[in-house]
Image (cartoon, rainbow, N blue to C red; front, side, top):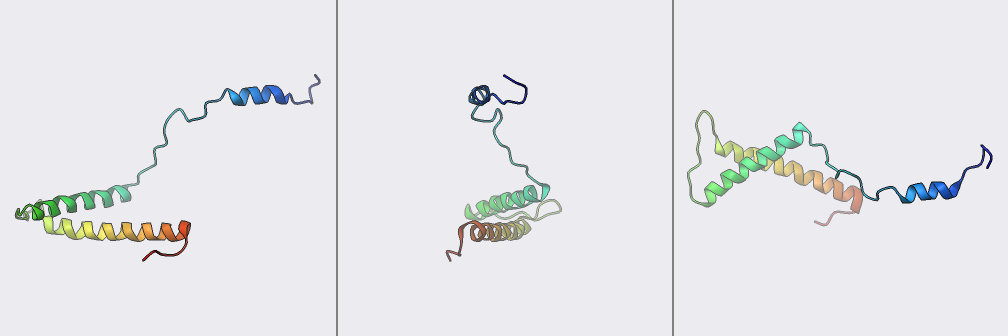
Length: 96
């Protein structure tokens, strides 16, 4: 074969030998802002669980469970808004 001719059969054979799945699974990046929202919601779930079990919410210099509930509710609202925006962007109209 000459130098300016591509051998497609060998290129096809090389592609067939490549793995079909990546060596490592995809791991999305998590930003500090996302982690903070998750943490706020997690603390709110802890506080809500205490209320559900009839426990008294702690409030001192280190722990303010009522503020955990408020911040968690705010973070959950922001998350719900983001989900709605994504659903409208990728799926069309709102399902409310």
